[in-house]
Length: 489
Image (cartoon, rainbow, N blue to C red; front, side, top):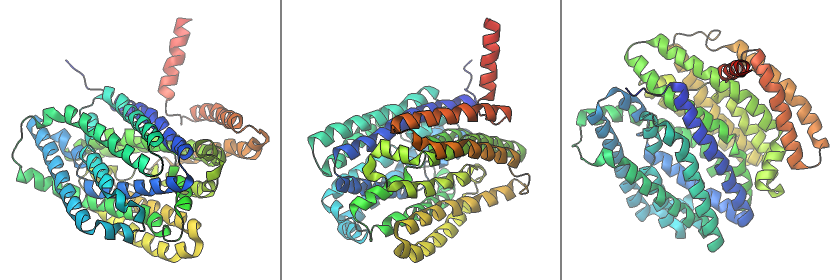
């Protein structure tokens, strides 16, 4: 009898795949900045900003509803929910095409992206292919397909990297990476059609009851995502009025954040939400609460050291990846990555699992209003510093509000909400290990050597200290390894 993989093995598979993909994701901008001018790179990042904005808006949270409905329905219901999700995507894309056909030029001019007017078709194609394929990784997770979770992300990132490099070398300027993105997204769409065929080999009629339930779940969450998008990208659209494409290229690097950390969050959250959904449907609040607390233990154990390390080595990381020409991004980058100290609390898992996405909407309404007000006041006055502070507020505010809603659902007080002792100890040891690195690393003149030595020194001290205080994420695996080695002797 086939045994489903454990939550840990599923999360590990997703994490392995995402880490491998993230390494390649690092290579893409690092190579692109060396192949095109700083101005073209800025325009390329603006193209990505516009595409990602419409991508989130058109998805409307429909794919996220699969985490809730897929685990609690039969095989026919699974096919119906996927078909209906795709149907909703198609409706939204038709609306996009009609709107852009009539008002596209005006929209791009209003957003200060006049450079895209001649690339409007490429923009629509790229967005369309990406939206249509957006649920495939969700399906891998829900099918508990650990093999594809490991290999899909790195393979698609590698394909994107190869296509970008080849097309940029063949077609100079801004148009090269634009065409490359369209080709990459089309290849992704072809694989999607191949893999998802079993879900579409028989077309079912729309189940209005299921569609209604899906919309009730998705629409509040979808509008919450859009509002969150406004909060987190308002600074980028608004500051665009005051800076050149070259400056935008530098500023956009500030949001490099810690990509591996984001993938770590995603790998855990994607397998925990369906389990929380099952627990909440069975009125097992204790099980859901335990799952959430264990998730926070895992995310904080990695997040705190990662933020300290990347903050300390920000100069080196930006210079190695993007060259010294983009060193100005360091000061904004160090401000923005502080947001991980809040996002490590794994917000919205309980709200999504409990089908209370309306609270996510409320959180993001408040966050958006506050962000826009602050941005209008401080961005014209303080420029890029005001913009990055606005971005920080836009991320932290809705997270904090939604976490408070979840705390109340779980009937937890602030003092027993999470394991504050572990967080404080982890924070303290990371601070005292990172401090000497920050002070003495510049005495090593070779940037590559000092980065490697600093990372090794940090890891060599942090891992034993985390193990001593039972904070290390892989304690069980380390002890099993030591036990195995002793037995071998």
